[in-house]
Image (cartoon, rainbow, N blue to C red; front, top):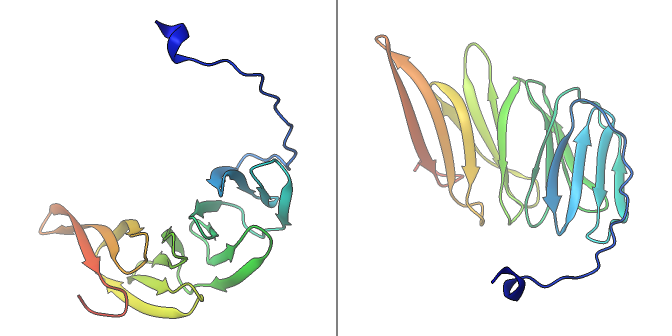
Length: 177
């Protein structure tokens, strides 16, 4: 019986106001919402209160969240920034275009860059210090960090003698294994 399994409640919805544009990304963050677009980054708490409004100089911002922070980066651009609910923690630029990124619940993050001559992944710890840089053969199609940030998975695609191969490589940041 559906009535026995469903409770009814009065729910009041509150309006969330943010600058709308065509390149927006949305993600949940600490029970609230993070919105990134050309016009900037807006973070809302679980109660709907705006806790951060930050201008971004990005035309194709991508948004990743973890239990600890928010990572915003420019897809095929060179800029990235890390935020918490209230402030920007750090920002940086890469020499080659950013192809993808990953973030862990502990605050570690990884940025993959790719151009015609090389691909690499830079891994930063929870203090935003560079801990490792891995140079990769092939095209990086995905990254993932475990929740502690001490295990990095890199998905690559490459062609050898006309045969395409996909490969998942696992690294402990700061080591070659």
